[in-house]
Image 1 (cartoon, helix red, strand yellow):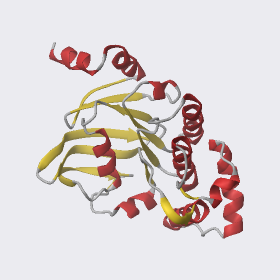
Image 2 (cartoon, rainbow, N blue to C red):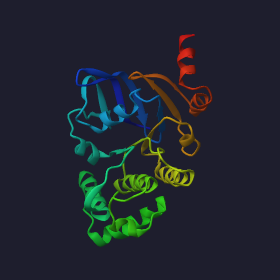
Image 3 (cartoon, rainbow, N blue to C red):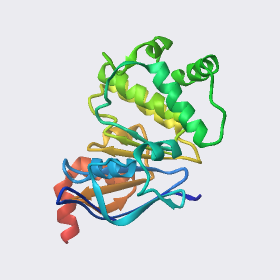
Image 4 (cartoon, rainbow, N blue to C red):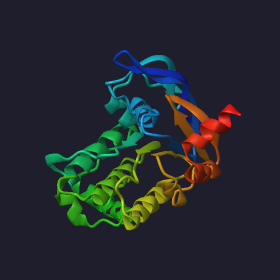
Length: 253
């Protein structure tokens, strides 16, 4: 298995405030990782920096994707290469239909891979197969992107985007936030169907419940801009039982 993402001694700031303080993380093909931690620990910041969010400045270290540094790449370039970030609060795009948005995104990704663009009819056949993954109906395609969508529909639409783009690594930030149990099962089932031996998935979450449905091989705990512990999915169960303060006490002993 080759490395998809290699983060080495990553430090970052927002303004003059240090946010990440030496992150080291390697993610290989076929792996599912979970990153857990309290609010403000740096989980979402790490995801945004990987995706290229311009509010943050990397002051030291490197991020390599498929062996090459991506620090100088714009967010859209990273996306075209196969890095997908699923947002905690997906944005609405009034006036842009889901079908048009997804086809343009798909063709941009295909162009990066050297594949021909899909015409509308060809894309319609392609996307209808993908809709089944997240139990969505074709009428979703005619609606504006996330406009008037319920929380569950927005998250399912994110997983649909992930499927359409054939991503190399998907980083899902609090994808279980605001979901009832039925929506959580649908979203989790979609993610599991899209996990392959050639891609990787990173789950960012506060709670262990998501990991009952999507099983990670690795669980990392962040605190104050650092990864303070890495373990198996058993670590998440221990955190659910004992809380994050237990972990800090355990590390001191």
